[in-house]
Amino acid sequence: MIRLLKPIEYYKKKYGTCCYGLNLLYLMMEKQHNRGQEGAGVGVIKLNATPGNEYVFRERALGSGAITEIFGNIAARTKGADEKPVESAEAFTPFIGEIYMGHLRYSTTGKSGLSYVHPFLRRNNWRSRNLLLCGNFNMTNVGEIFDTIVKQGQHPRIYSDTVVLLEQLGYELDKENRRVYHNLRDRFEEPQLTYEIEKELDITEVLRSTAPQWDGGYVICGATGSGDMFALRDPNGIRPAFYYVDDEIVVVASERPVIQTCLNVARSQVKELTPGTALTVNKSGELSLSRIMDQGENKRCSFERIYFSRGSDADIYRERKALGHNLVNDIIEATGDDLSKVVMSFIPNTAEVAFIGLVEGFEKVLDRQKRDEILKLQADRQLDSETLTAIMKRKLRVEKIAIKDIKLRTFIAEGSSRNDLAAHVYDVTYGCIRNGEDKLVVIDDSIVRGTTLKQSILRMLDRLHPAEIIIVSSAPQVRYPDYYGIDMSRLGEFIAFRAAVALLKENGREDLLLEVYEQAKTQLKLKPTEQVNVVKAIYEPFTDREISAKIADMLTPEGTSAKVKIVYQSVDGLHRAIPDCPGDWYFTGDYPTPGGTVLVNRAYVNFFEGHADRR
Image (tube, rainbow, N blue to C red):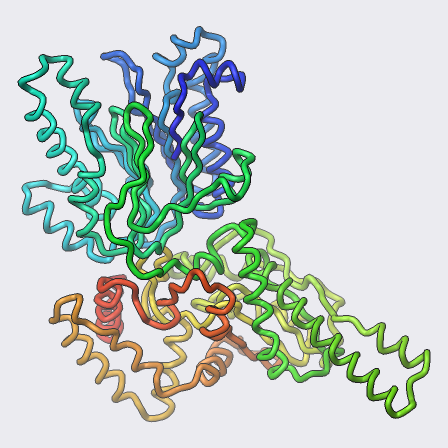
């Protein structure tokens, strides 16, 4: 979100264009393209439009090229704006305004189509009752919120958390308009009364009357047609939000380096929006930070740091390196300590930084090995120049084995299309492996379903004829659905869950599956705050390594010559690498809000009964 604090004429004079806000929005959306490739949307609010002229503009598109399509369409409508007098361009040119909103969609609920692309728009003939809304969120209690607004007499057009929130916020915005109207109606006549209402609206009251009912992880951004703008972050800080303010502009984005790069400002100037807090800018351009809900326990999303965010953030870069470094001992246990037979590589592109940390960790091991050998030879009086030179020449064998031809995220694709995509994501570099002798270690950021591994990566790596293939995950075993924004689908699709179920059956413990089913049904009869995650019992009979070994067995394609092993990050290693973002419910099942626990119990019931329902 962008709020221009100066007149359009100021930006025309300083930056040479009336489209400064649009250009900045385009750049920021391209820099955050990693956050969503299914669709995109743009919203603009013009504060100085005259009656009879549009003042809320929206453009949306589907597909990975949505940003280009959107701004191509906008460019056609703003063509020639800089050649007009500024007051004319500001008043009558579409998409030139003071408030800008951009959103990139990354589907988390399996629903697709333009109807689900943000921003959403609630129309009204009074500017202060128009509402433009977008967000990075999933609500776990959308059904309860839906029932609440239906009881108020509303009739939502679509059953989705965005539409439900739009209608709920819209209802409270109407109430706030009425409250101010009743306070001012004896003091002002129309149309001055309308303008005074726009000035006196308190958007924080709208948020305080709605947000405490929400259970989920979210950053909700919105703007009224009259010029009030807000961004609200959930109390546990599950989803990320950062902002920058100076005398020209207010900017809010999901990632810090996007703001740093696009505005060329220092890291220290970009602030994190405190959980439970709303950043608001009123019609007059006055900024406030208001406590909407008490700040809860820190549950900032660790998977966001591992996978979703851009690695150019200083903290995220350091954390991803630490994730790789923390895996060294587990990998040595899997490969043995003869590093001359180990070739290390990574799965592009998000695992590259963890790979750097992994290599740094192995370099320390190799340095220690060389030091110990030199000291021993020296003590035995067997060290000579030739031997010393041979020892010092030993290097880690680091290669770029996998090449990603196309940018596809298969873990969130659906059904058979995911399998088709997975088989064509990567190609391989030949000539780096000694046939039947070398052990190939390849690190990935995470192994969620294992689809790409089985359909593509392991088959591809086996063509190099290594003795062993060790796939390393910089994240722990993903065992539970997320539900808070990176919603990783149904229980039965997680390879860790399937492996645990398979182990139960192999060990004659199928009775536990029925037992947990009965417990889950009992839990769902309780209040959300009283429920516990009974699905944890599925994993309890086995160690992490037993489950990892079963995963390796299940994912090894038929006919694979190499022995396949899988090494996962430990939860302890995760927290050591990412101490400030301890949200780990997808790994541990410890959900940050009651809604997540309710949904995972329901997910197990759906799994056991064979339902395909996501929730």
